[in-house]
Length: 128
Image (cartoon, rainbow, N blue to C red; front, side, top):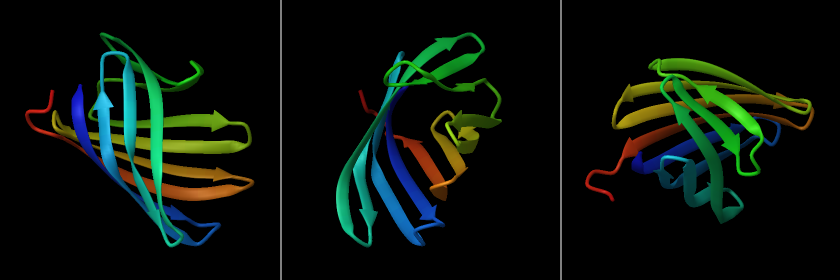
């Protein structure tokens, strides 16, 4: 829960480009909202994403903003997840390093996309 600093690096293997995202995420009891800027060789654009959370004693169901299922996260410090979206395959890994830091890695493959992203979340101290 709380406010987090976000830094992401993304390598688009099909487009042969590198992108960087910097911003903040707010994790609440029932949602995850991330806002910031996506930097590429073409310039900078605002970026935002929202996930809905349903937490219980064994972890959290993560859903897209429209309510459809995305992934399930348990309580283990090192977790692998898979999500199929049409012809695209998302393979993720979450490393919960401490209560104040976690890492998210995705490898995505499909007919029109092939990329990898690495994101680091660090809790912002004393944030409401």
